[in-house]
Image 1 (cartoon, helix red, strand yellow):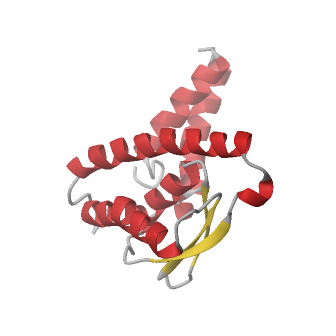
Image 2 (image 1 turned 120 degrees about the vertical axis):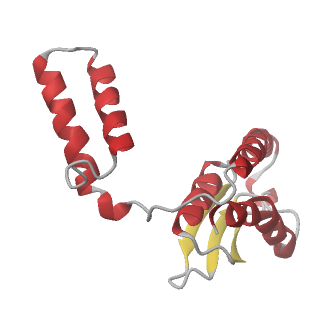
Length: 163
């Protein structure tokens, strides 16, 4: 069973999404949805991080709230800067953040947070997972202040959740 359904939640999700996208319950749609629900998780198994256990799942809600607030604040800040400043007044650069987080699931969550937040983009993870290169749209403070923010606001909670 595990060989055919390597990720049952993903299979169920794919099946439902396929049926909803096609807005049909005819046999062809259901068969293709079943084939995709089985094949896609099998094909992408090596791309998913290792399964892990959550040490403190309650922190996910606090982290999610912090991320939601940061997304809104950052979106308004980026829009304001784009609409009111000329390009030379925008100080974009790359910042290398040293990492203590090593869990692949925690790193994946950190990647999602940084890529979804307007004004930042995950650029590169060192091969030994010791540092992360982030592109920052505008950084008024010094690099150390930004690094401390990332480590305090995102990395530390993710370490408490996953490690």
